[in-house]
Every structure is written in C-alpha cells, then in structure tokens.
Image 1 (cartoon, rainbow, N blue to C red):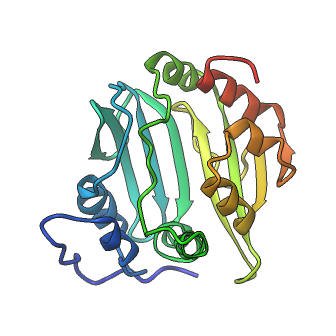
Image 2 (image 1 turned 30 degrees about the vertical axis):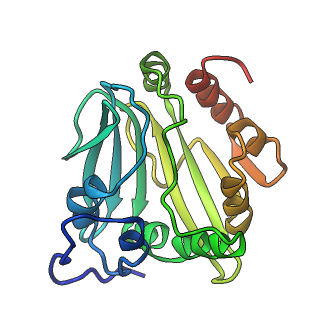
Length: 224
C-alpha cells in the first residue's frame, strides 16, 4: 500500500525533544524527516569524524536519497548520494513510515512502557566509529535484506543494507535475515552485542550466510 504523506511541511517547535519524535504523525514526509527533523533532534552520537557517508534511499512517491555524515559528533545530511559511500539503506516509502512513525516505533514505545522507562532516544555515543573500520566496510560488496515480521499486524517490513557504493539490490539481495519484530525489539532494548544477536537463535538467515559475519568483522576490526 502506498503511503499518504502530509500535504505540507510540519510545524515544528524551535527545539526538538524525544517526545516530539514519538509524537510525529504517520504522514510525516521523508524530506521533512531527513532535512528538518533528524538534524535537529538531540541525538547522542560518537565524537568521531568520518569521511564516508551512509546513504538512505526511500523508494517510491515522495521518496529520494539522503547522505548522512558524522562530523565531530554531529550529524550532517545532504540531499542525494555523496561519495565516498560506506553503506546504503533502502526501503519503500511504506516501510520507511512503519519504521519511524508506525509499527516499529509503537513496539519501541511498548517496550519502554513495560520496562517503566521514559520515552527516550537511543544513545549511540558508545558505538565504535573507527574511520579505518568504516573504510574497510566501504570496500566490501554485497547486500543484506532485513525482514521484520510483525505478527500483530500480519505484515513484513523490509530494509536492505548495501555495503559500499555498489548497485542497490532491493529485490534480489545476497542475504536475507528474517527476525520477529518483538524479538528484535527485546534484543535491542537489552543492548545485545551484534555477534550475540546473530548467535541468539532469533534470526533466520537465507542466502550468503558469510556476508553478515564479514561485515561485522570489518566493522569490529576483529574476527568473531
């Protein structure tokens, strides 16, 4: 089903908070998210300086491409694809909506409520952002599709990660990783390390099963 975006840009407060994010409507346009909202959110990010970009492609009406750069702990976003590229994330407009403003966000809120935690944005500052390791990831080739199975809505949300600046394989990825949405949310809230997520038994991997390990090895700078 094609998403219906808002007819006009959102009216936003001068300073955004986590609550503002959790209150964004499902009709929030991709352009508003990448160009106005995301850069203004109080995100906690690594203090590294990365030359490589992470590009997000939203496919379909109202979509586009946006390049994300990390510079001294601040997120900088440019419209379009800007080299050098480390990774690319691709999704349809409908699944973009579910990820940020729909079912996936609602699961996040539900888990926070169950844990009696406030609605807060994830803290990315402890994430290792080594420029050498990011450059190693950029040299890899291949694509991984993450399929989040939503049992409550009887739906599947699909997000494709393409390593490096190669062609995006939205429909024919090298590897497909299936996981139940509730299981993934629980693992994320428990801050489960990536390698433990892979060995948790919660993931079903189809296709090239070596590719996720190769990507993590390059990113972590060591063999799993």
